[in-house]
Image 1 (tube, rainbow, N blue to C red):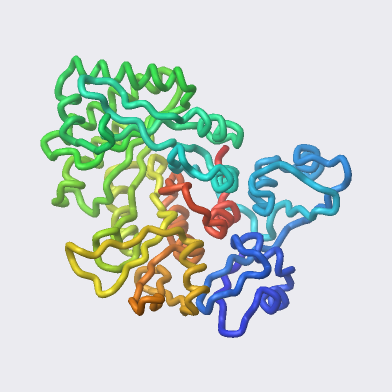
Image 2: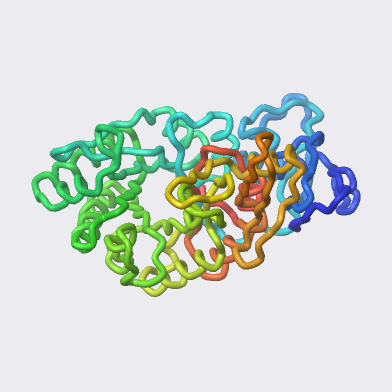
Length: 425
């Protein structure tokens, strides 16, 4: 496995000659067509097939997998050109495995709204261990805000990914309320009624785990929140499933700020079966242009978390999105546009921009001028930045990664995940 950074004048054909690979293979693992124009500074994932197989009449994904000693799901990972759909045609060339062996097994979980483009989700699900449809919430008095999630649950199961019920502080009016969550947690009767509603929903829908994401919990509720997670975990464990808890990205225990103070890493680590470090949003919609997940900041959170939580309980959060800022940035007025990582490269190609790489943040970025003469600054993720983050997973023996979110394509990133690690199914 290699990462190639495009230089001026290079094409998929010239790069393929350099590495002894067909241009179509390079395009396959980078979410490109062979007609795509490359961008100077663009990072490409280079994978060498371990073996190939030419589809014969009558072959199915299952019969080919059996003959090659692999699994249908692994073939879908190794062949993203299938789009996650097990339809083959004679003469099609399939890849089975790569020359660089996969590392240890990790868990890959992530989120999708019910409106997700099904074709995008099908492309991603072969690389996924657990899918959490976003989101269930809290009804005043202790009920659960419903979610139309049946199709996503069925899709997850079809790709051997366990569906997780996602629980947040969403209210019936569509807003998020830490105050309502506090009221429910502080009242034993409402807390028990809410827990009953959660468990009943899990059983009715066929969920195989619970992911709790209560953000902006008050400092005074930190111990109560951890206790509440412990109560839920007992009931979820009784069903044979696991409870996950999302954590604000703290770098030290008493870090000030309303997003941090209600998350006690030590207590939550004790009371949850798994935790997701939300290690993103340093660069955010209303902030100044910068990397969404700069490596130095991510590392500080991981190293602090490891002082409070066992590595086998920690999932590293990674962003599957980017931001496009219009300059000049004006605090309180500017608002960045959220875009996809593949979309960012497409913008650079259309605008004739050169992609740069910030060595400190380990993140790519570029600028361009739009048709109205306004300057833009874009920060996004590519295989270099993701590879650096996956290095932390490997270095510290973390449980895996949690992706926010599965709404946009990022083929190079998911191909990298599948090439570096065996993904738990």
